[in-house]
Amino acid sequence: MKIYSIFRSLQGEGLTIGAPTTFIRTSGCPLRCTYCDTPQAFDKGEQMTLDAVMKKVKQLKTRHVCLTGGEPLAQKDSFKLVQMILDEGYHLVLETNGAMSLDELPCVENLTISMDIKCPSSGESEKMLYENIEILGPTDQLKFIIQDDGDYDFAKEVVKKYSPKCEVIFTPVGGKDLKELAEKVLKEGLDVRVLPQLHKFIWGDEDNR
Image (cartoon, rainbow, N blue to C red; front, side, top):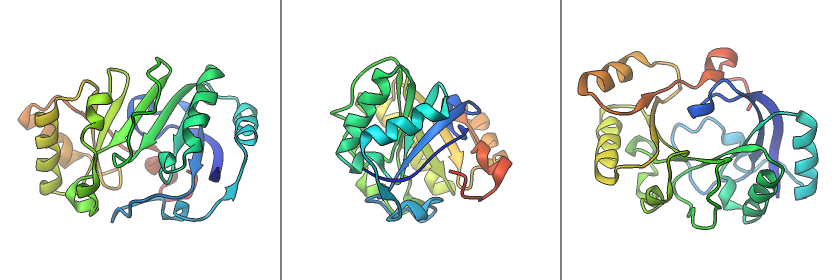
């Protein structure tokens, strides 16, 4: 697989926010979101065997592992890597962009699928596979990155139409300016979580992820 980086940090997003986590960041992504915060992972990286990846994961000694990108599922060997991580007993969060099929992923307790639905401001909302939402279960999470009122209304409509069985997370673009989004969610009584990107508060835009 082509890997951009493997490192230990705090989970900055989603339901395991704050947990010490080993991140495996893959290279390559079929999308080009306007607000992407990891464009360095589009093409940079090095080829690693799956055994070499697992050796590095074990050295970092965390209970949680996050497979992220780029877009992990753009590389076919990611499915093998997912199974290897799960077989070692780690809790795995797989971050995926909503444009890749989830059909081949196992349904097990120690796998959390963290899937985005890209909103209109991303420039990539037309590429979403909405049938993926049916695959998400109670231990998974569906995320929307929201930049403006158009994104907010779009996210509301998707949630209303598909009634996800998992937790739904709204996060502002940039991950820090929460007040306006939080007030909208409270005013309208939406059953979603408003969460920051914790790493942005700690390290700013530093390339620690």
